Image 1 (cartoon, rainbow over the protein chains, first blue to last red):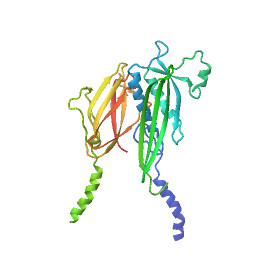
Image 2 (cartoon, each protein chain N blue to C red):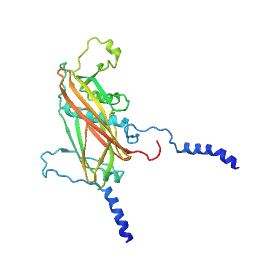
Image 3 (cartoon, helix red, strand yellow):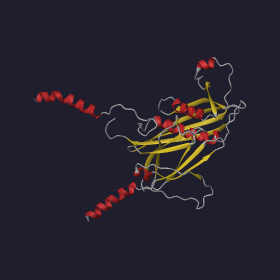
Image 4 (cartoon, rainbow over the protein chains, first blue to last red):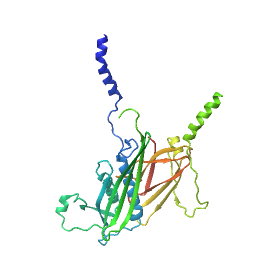
Length: 192
Length: 136
């Protein structure tokens, strides 16, 4: 009997540990159930930064009617320039930039080009078949910076999102903004 | 004696939870924003106490974008965290899908007031709804 119990013990442990797990399930990407970690830029941080940047751009440039188009009677054309990831983490900056582009297109006040941009065209086929190209009126550039610190068990990560909108005609930055997201958490006393 | 000792031990702990702010502002503000008459559905009184909406204001810019500001105050004397999310509706009352929609986290010290500002994503957005979430 004792031998049987001993032999069943690992299996019982495995069942018990499996019982502690949570079944995979979907959560609302725009809700507050998404996972938050200290040392990484989470999906909600990109959305939060994109929301702040878009709000600022609409408020200060689009809603005021300050964005000028080089083509009379047409909307201003925006191209995406270099967005540097200066954090210690690898991610696609489109997690931020695409949200901003979609939101800006949604305003109905600007166009975005997919055939011109830093690092080549986003749509090579459209670029190859383009009969007449229009020069962008504005370029969007920026940087994502990380600053980490620790005090005792408390860890803090600050992610700074910096964006600039530059007039392509004269190189003047017509809009700039910065959004800082700070996250804190304690390092577990035991474990990984 | 035991009671006094217990009280002395509890006081610093309670003081640690308290974190309220002092504020100063003009008695007669020179600018007065356009107030919006709002409707509230409160299902969590605790959350309403942590993030009580004290005023809703709106303005429309030259290009027709609606700007909304909610003044929110933490009614408690302790630090409170919550998040909020704006939703925008067109002239037919239909929700406009947004790529940047997210629950934005906010932390307020005791009795602190803050302004939650949002810009309509398009001039077609005519109405809005704000949802508050408790901190995770």
